[in-house]
Image 1 (cartoon, rainbow, N blue to C red):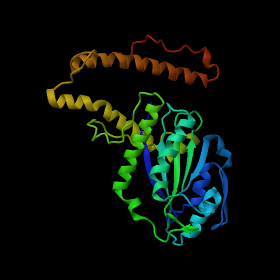
Image 2 (cartoon, rainbow, N blue to C red; image 1 turned 45 degrees about the vertical axis):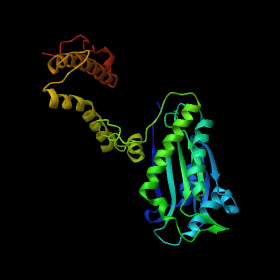
Image 3 (tube, rainbow, N blue to C red; image 1 turned 120 degrees about the horizontal axis):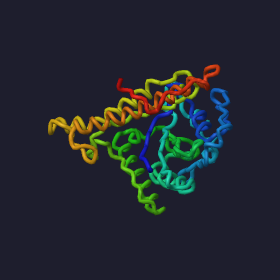
Image 4 (spheres, helix red, strand yellow; image 1 turned 135 degrees about the vertical axis):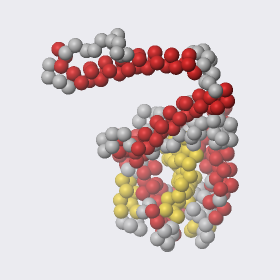
Length: 306
């Protein structure tokens, strides 16, 4: 199902970031940061990078044509040790669209909304292994181009909240237009749950750090994963809580009209779940024991209420 996401962040030297390193990762290439004399090699991850393209204003200087020269020039142009080097947009693109349609949608939006304001933007479509999370990274300059160099002043209006809200809305419209053009009924909405009248707590992102620790076995169950499960649990019981506030009981449809009737159904379902869980745990346990397969498994019809 199509989802909405537009995240904007700043690549900052003050946080130890490099525009060249950011570009190397997003394009899946090997680049040398001339300022620090460091090599950033992400060429081994090219399978996850579908396509990259640089979009430039008319009459942009020649250095903006190539990834290496563009972002090295950005590094040279910024003198402060805490300089803001680039702005990045991360956009979710609909899984319902093919790669060509996804890229066309992102490029068209970036050309109008970013390059049209004077930025140089590098658009990279990523589709990691499994194809479940296609998304686009757009790395943009913080300055416009003037002649053969970057402008002396940064347009501060690009950092204002109204501008971010406008970008969020226009990306939503671009995504829905692409879905409609491709004949898909799915649509996305950039508004918050509150603005849409949806009584649900927004789920936080697990994040690449937590997922990385889990995959590497550093932490079996990161705190971020626990938080997401907790929020999902709260959202699951919230309709019941609201119903109790209004009527004193949970009104149900289909599986019991009241809280009491519903609870009987839940107890029955829970018993089945517990029986299955116990059996699965037992099977995993005996698989690790010498001669374990000679041990009888628990009866799937055992009485767990004793």
